[in-house]
Length: 66
Image 1 (cartoon, rainbow, N blue to C red):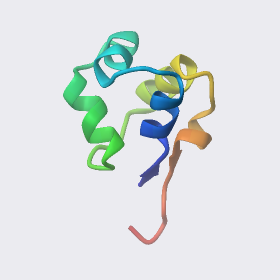
Image 2: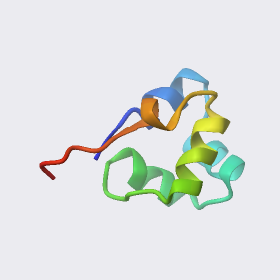
Image 3: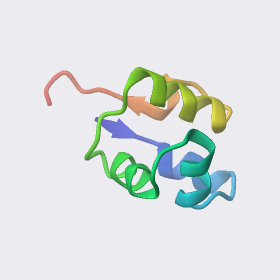
């Protein structure tokens, strides 16, 4: 999985903890998502997209070869 989550978060001047609070997860979860170590649930992906005023497709891309 590839993600632009860190870029989008930083673009809005948010810390990992700030974004975590907005979507009700731990800061560590945001860190793992940004590193591509964690695949979000559909609900979490949608919440992140809404919090960052973007789309799920803009935040995450899933490579069929992974």
